[in-house]
Image (tube, rainbow, N blue to C red; front, side, top):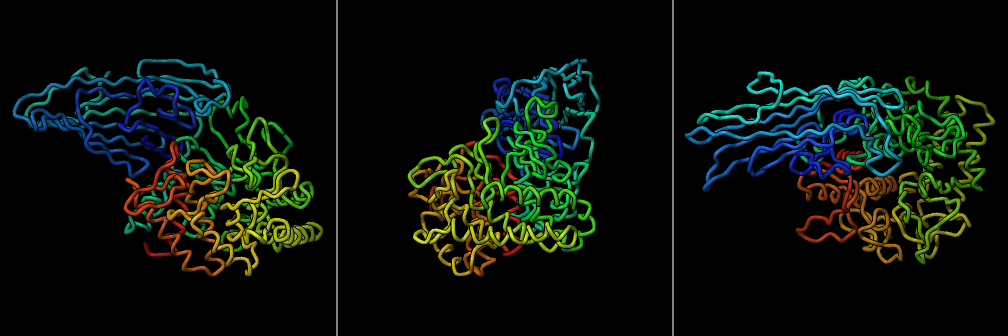
Length: 593
């Protein structure tokens, strides 16, 4: 799949850069603000062969096609499909390489649509939209009151035409440009795309690709810039993903942290709504722009099913508020105070731990490993009940520890005392309840019966990043992380090989995630394991270099790295993914690759 994005405009094309009628039910098409507006966009221009394509930028795809006959090229075609914040510009330049006239039959099959991206993913039913077609344009009005108008125009030799010609004739040596411009005239989402300063990684091909991907994944919203999680399934803000992305690049791109904090504070939970897992002070998990969500047909504007986003929000705000951004972030204190109160309440409710429960209308598991089989016991049983997953406790301890002096400054002594007391109590419980002496490692967490999920997983490595590990336990943890059961050569496995739940091609039970590996590496460096950190940094860069477009995916399989062989991919992974790109940039900033 070829994916392109510029602010709210995003395109998911086949590998040949088109959308055929057969993809009608798939996540393929031309989208704006999470709505597919073209379900078919298919060029027909004869028996050309696609010889080359390039998609290093998220805003442009280029292709080279050739019409071959008897071992020579008759006609070449250079195609450039680029997108701006509100347009798609598709330019085809045909050139005749023979000494005779060449006539080419041309066709472009277009199918208008108005389907919510979540509907295409099978979430909720279709949202009926009122549609009006007018030749080369159409308008659509959704139940939430929003409307969108789409139009397109055709130019040949820079002259605008009423319709696409059925054929073009090229004289010997002649070159002719044919262009189609699609314009989205949405009544909402008119913000211009975010434009950063210069790319600081122009001399590092792998890092430069991650920089371009991360910039391309950003939304420019009224609250500031916030990253989409990934393309094609997650072209929207996610609380956890956006916050972890911001942590990775808070020094090189602080505007992501600032925009994310403002966006999440704007949408902080204000009431109790079990349908969307909303609670006062809770930070969202996912925010969808589509009409099904905006009209409340499905609970995704926003959905709050995340146990860790609130702690990450408080932690990031505390860190960003201790420098030059303190004044601009002080306006968010009411939201931060509410988020702190949510953490304190959930610790009391969860018997000293932050826990999550299954929501039958939402997510079963609500840590970062949120697939339905990710929380498992040593004997292979799935965990159930009110689960306390280990990394969430680490994030919460870090959040409370870092916010402590700021609570004392902004709030009352009663709240400050509660924060201080809960932070110390949580740290003690992490050490006594979640550490396993026999394993010399932290368990994945506790299930609803307080039975330990006694498996080796990458979750525990996040405690190193949070600083929630005594120095005496860091060395055995590092040794276990680099055991061949956990270290694949490309990164850390999400679940150790040998565990009953392990599977190399699972979403969370043995696969390798670059952001997960990056957080563990960050933690290792925090504890003085510089050599190990550099080894991980080199492995992640090698992973990107082993891929055709130097672009890190959401995840890869957990198979062991083989000499001179690329990694075995995970089917259907999102490429690019914001926190993968950001993790690589974090590692790049700390080693000259």
